[in-house]
Image (cartoon, rainbow, N blue to C red; front, side, top):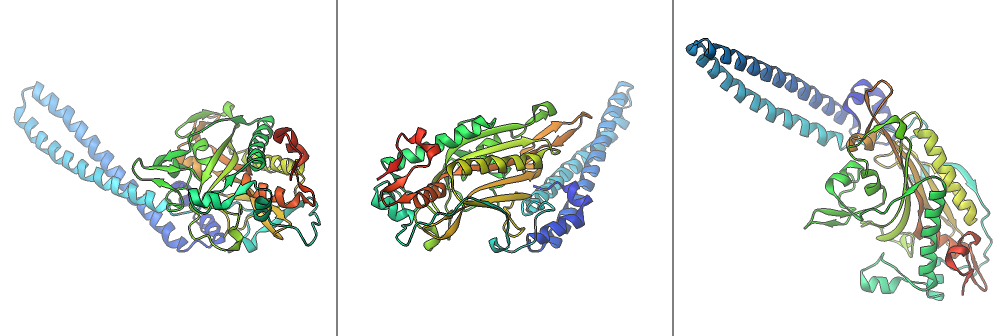
Amino acid sequence: MLQVHFIRENKEAVLNGLAKRNFANAETIVEQVLTADENRRATQVQLDNTLAESNKLSKEIGGLFKTGQVQKANILKEKTVQLKEASKDLSEKLNMYSDELDTLLYQIPNVPHASVKSGTSEDDNENVFSEGVIPDLGENALPHWELAKKYDIIDFELGNKISGAGFPVYKGKGARLQRALINYFLDKNIEAGYTEVQVPHLVNTASATATGQLPDKDGQMYHSTVDDLYLIPTAEVPITNMFRGNLMQESEFPITVTGYTPCFRREAGSYGAHVRGLNRLHQFDKVEIVRIEHPNNSYKALDGMVEHIKNILRELKLPYRILRLCGGDTGFTSALTFDFELFSTAQDRWLEISSASNFETFQANRLKLRFKNKEGKSELAHTLNGSSLALPRVLAGILENYQTADGIQVPEALIPYTGFSIIN
């Protein structure tokens, strides 16, 4: 969530940034925010003055009673009753303006970083890096869903029977390869200095709101209404919320955390061939990296996250590219996002497998995640996260790009984790 004083002091920059996102009615809602804030601040001043006057009169009343001036004291008591009523009305008014302000602020996305270009969709994203050799598999190459059936390693129909579409069952070497990828990703992250955690897979409303899933993605998350808990769409949510409300010291930076969780997304409205097989699921596994950084270091940290993910893909010898997302395709909470896409040779298309994002203070403002700077003043931290990595499409890419006439070869880096070198 943007800070009101930032909007007030940087109005034109905010409007220009929101224009990159094609954010509708930006000028109107920004003006509404500023008006609500003015009303809130003016009401706060009125309330403070009223309470101060009431306190002053209460002291005077005590003195009058002590000196026997009962009549004067009773007159002042009547006035304090009026002041208490006025302060009650002002408090209610203040709460109304505060709620109105929060409702408006929740609607405004983050302001994109200066390097983010304007654009309306993924077609306007910038290709900033590519690496790896796209294998020539010949005309008989199969997509991963056919390979999964051929070698009996993923059963989509069985998952549909148990739960519905988008809930596959991994079997035999498919399950072992999935587990190998999870352990491999975690080990690579731990080697890079991230601390592993295991976190809850359900979160409360406060947690989902703090990291920006609510209200923006309300309806896209699975919601247990009886207990008012949400199944997590990514480990970013519980991991980042570990630090909600914290007041840190500068010496604690950076905080680097990794964790594996299943992820749950309703993906409402997703249909067609592009979501077939592992391309888009309602339940999938992902290993996440999260960083809490000093504002002066957050973009250097983002570059480091990108390099870290690059190194993993190099070890897996998968062809990939990196896109800097345009304003129209950048997530609601992000200031700058780099998407990693893996080339699926059998499908002849690019598949998103990771995102690395800097949210700057947007999440921290909702989280109330602050630190004491060198001057002793409280300041918002920066939060970052990245997929390292999302498993379904990485697995799809391995199955498709490593297929041979004899079976599916296992990437060399994964053989110590799988215990086998080929699926046949």
